[in-house]
Image (cartoon, rainbow, N blue to C red):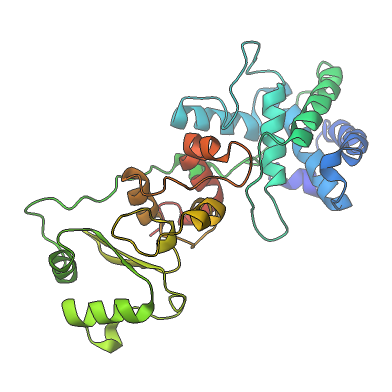
Amino acid sequence: MQSWLESHHRTKVTSTDAWYLDFANKLISMIDSSGLYTDKTWAEKQFAAKLLTLYLEDCVAEDGGWHHFCKLYSKRYGDRLPFFVTPEDYIPDEINKVDIAFILWTINCRKTSHLVIADPFDENTLELAAQVYTFLDEYFEQAPICDIPSNDWVMLSEQLIKDKTMVPEIESGIKLPNSVELFLKASDGQQLMYFPCYEDMESFFINHLHWKAADLPDKLGAEEGNIVVYANPKGLLVAPSVACFFCDKRNETYDSTYAVNEGYKVFTEQGYCPFDLVKYAVEHKLFPDIRLPFKNGKDILWNNWDFIARYFLGEFYEGD
């Protein structure tokens, strides 16, 4: 009950709470028998049952966190859902299989302390979505309307509201920081430079930008090399350990195999690659080999990359 109330940002029990908690308990046995949850803890199964029950409650009330998410997502992207094409028989104010499949995807992405990317079209996920849909459909007409809607439980609203800014352009006549001016002169006007190791970058900064050793970027995190330095109107951005993902004829550190296997992490791991640099790379088509680590992962990523970045990067999406 406490967890259920927290999902509504309230402490007082309403007349409908007992019905929905009873429904969630019935749903757990179905979740427990699914191949998707054979290795999950009981707490994880309870969490899945709670979110799917919140979905039912929101559909019945035509309000709450689910409807808020769909409204904001549609306003942002023009579609009802990420990943899934809504079928012709899709009814926004009722339960739908693709809705349930998406909710299961959000659950599959959750780990104890972090998020990991899951396959939205995983066979067990789609099978369980169909089973849950049938179960919810049996109870839809019986379910009571809750007058106090659920809170954001799909995704924080601010992450969908936040606007994606344009990649900062260097235009003729614009006033640039001195370090950026010197960088562009040394790079023949190129905004990106790649350094296999920290010592190479250190030499460049000292010899071409006239920095002192004490002023150099912190070596912490850059000792493994593969550094990208990105010059833009804001200044110089240093990103260690990601140059191997940038397919650029000037980049000797590029590793297509590593990009295929690990490159998706620039969209899913907080702090892995600065978002301004990610946007620049996307706009200039420098990530041709990056894909998600499952079937059709390339199409799924590039049809949904901005949403995926919002969902996984959190405050690092368009962060300061």
